[in-house]
Image (cartoon, helix red, strand yellow):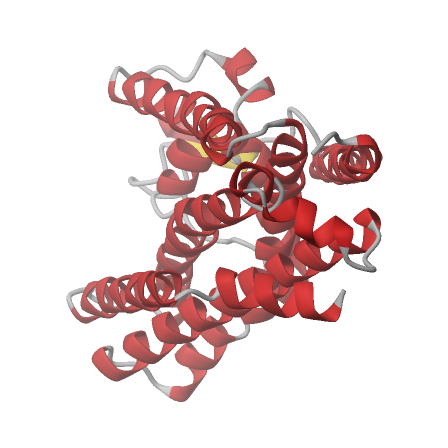
Length: 305
């Protein structure tokens, strides 16, 4: 199993994946640093929350979002289907390796590789943000304190998407056949609900609550918020939380009577969107992860190669 793990780790840490991960981190850090330079600073807490929300959004959508999901899906769908299509899986099972150990080695190699890519990308983001930004020690220390939370969230994302991709890989006989449904999932339940919600926000309507039940941005946004809680949570004014409200749907903004507003600019109340509690969402996705991996091992034991 050790040799298979090492090979899979090397394949996951391919040159293109490493370059893309580092470049994504550099790009995200540069954008965050430039945003920090042009902001007026009315107060320490306001400035810190603004920087944190921008950082959270970058990590959620770029580093632990599209980048991690696509890389994990691309690698995981080829773990078995690629070997079967190329005819090398027969060689693996012909050697003194059980099918269970083959699959376990491949999964562990992929998970370790994905974690290393995530660390590279986050480190590049923080480094570029620090080099190009203007922060004192307290601000940057607070930004850096969320690093473990990002890793925890990225691990949850990796486990779920890899479990689904590995299951498809065990069922399909070609990698492309396993990869296409993964891309379809990403488009239909990640991109499409986001576009619909943005259109509704432009029209001034957020009434499509039922969308949240099938919206992975909301599901994983709730998990993301849960992962951030031990490190300070996601805080800010109604205006600052507008982006997480529109993109992740983890907050709700309710208009209030102007006579009740504490200031002329506070025309809405921002509350956590608990349509589906974060604990339930996390439990369901962890359960699906276990089911997917269990089914993958059951299929691989009887798979005809």
